[in-house]
Amino acid sequence: MSEQSWEKIGVAAGELQAEILKGLLEAQGVPVVLSQEGAGHVFGLTVGLMGEVDILVPTHLVAQAQQVLDDYERGAFDSTGEPETDEPAEAKEDPEDQGSEPG
Image 1 (cartoon, rainbow, N blue to C red):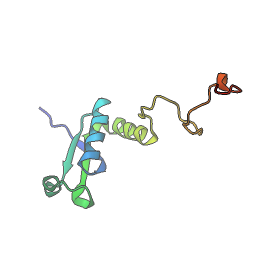
Image 2 (cartoon, rainbow, N blue to C red):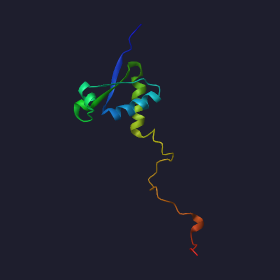
Image 3 (cartoon, rainbow, N blue to C red):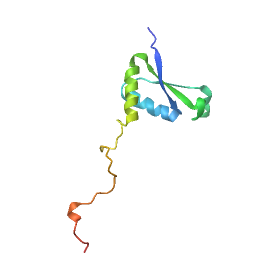
Image 4 (cartoon, helix red, strand yellow):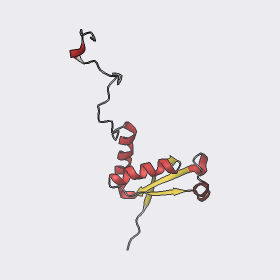
């Protein structure tokens, strides 16, 4: 039985961010192992070197994992359901209401 080799593809600032990225990668079919300094994990640190969490994936899936993270950074997984525009998301006027006065 051969051992699978893992490669670090990034560092998350705390366990919460690491778990979010892990869920994203796993949803895209990429297994993930998170590794954090023991004391950081025990004390729940989220800042500094002890709060950092290494994100590791199988070596043969590094390119796929990096693409998923790149897509995430670009907002490809946003779930607003509406395309991004420069127009503010304010209530739009109904054309039938134009010119009519409340009575």
